[in-house]
Length: 340
Image 1 (cartoon, one colour):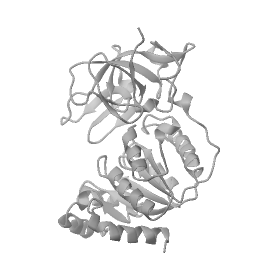
Image 2 (cartoon, rainbow, N blue to C red):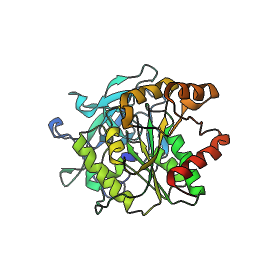
Image 3 (cartoon, helix red, strand yellow):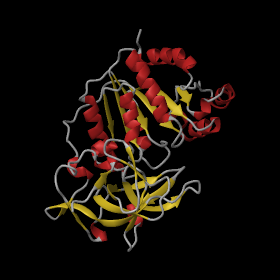
Image 4 (tube, rainbow, N blue to C red):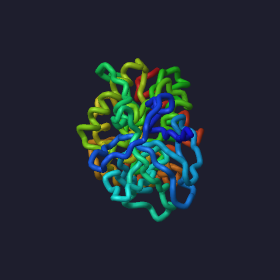
């Protein structure tokens, strides 16, 4: 009987659902980041037993379901930390994200239930060769990115970067600009850049397009992936790039490299903060190396919060979820992009 697989979004650039493959167990010493593996859901089901499929749609998982994901590493401040290298002899795996980032959890927030546990069934193979994300990366002719950048950074995960990006892309789109949206660092989750596309971005990219399940990786590996992504973005001939650096530049996702790479092109930096004191923390950590043009996110939810942001850091703060702030946002973006 033919097996039914749930293909997670780390597989979205592959052909696994159209071209047959076999599942073969590989010795633990031969595993590597980005390898496609098949897991069978086990354990007691809870709200985290779900899979973000290759289309970005969420599907509920039950025990016995087969999920195709990729080996990787996560280091999330608010949710969990894990790595495929932490797997033991039992070769059980945890879904470190619903998007198919597989490894073994080493530290989980007490606010979360147990991650979805899986039995390792084997690697995705063809002709006795294991397949991984890098096998399906589409190369690009090296090109220099020359368009202006709106950069979204955060004090942590879940600080409102994607929501801010949606609003900004929609505003730029209404202004008649051709916008590209990108999430350049983080842990695989397709729905973030799909929100950018829904907001009006003509094209969207993330690190999965460069073969990475997450950007917790060596700097050299990330730089190679980033240069490929920026070449793909440059080929779109857009007017402006709205780029999100997932998590925070201070976390091990290589966000600081993105800030450096885009420095000369960045016309407007949006700092999404969990609270006003976090704004001050980023300001102290980066000093003159990082200047925010606007603070938003939970740190700007109320007038009391925006006043405190100004008092602590001197930065302007706006709640981009409040439509009454749109005229001010439009004026700021026009000034930054030198539009009449």
